[in-house]
Length: 147
Image (cartoon, rainbow, N blue to C red; front, top):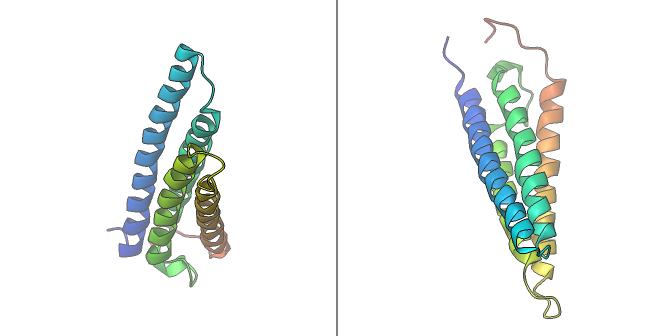
């Protein structure tokens, strides 16, 4: 049997998150090694958020969407749609780089507040993911061969 159209969209979103996870893992590890090498820990926020959000949280998002993809379209309740999954993906992938960029902007000119704005965008992505996953968890169990 072929995967439902919605299931493939959730799988594609999960794969995109896993690629992003590998990107932020590599970048965060390189930044951490660079901080050790140069004896400069000014970028701790950047380093830790690349690893915590970019690796940990994005991997959790990917795993959640992969799990949702394994369910048939018929078993998903209203409100768990590929369009919302895409919106969540774009919110998360705008929020994290903006938050990281805002963390290195100079304090005093108000530019550091940009990081806070993007932090709220990242938080909105997390809340949307929690809503999607909680709705999917409430759906009836998927059984092999069920459509």
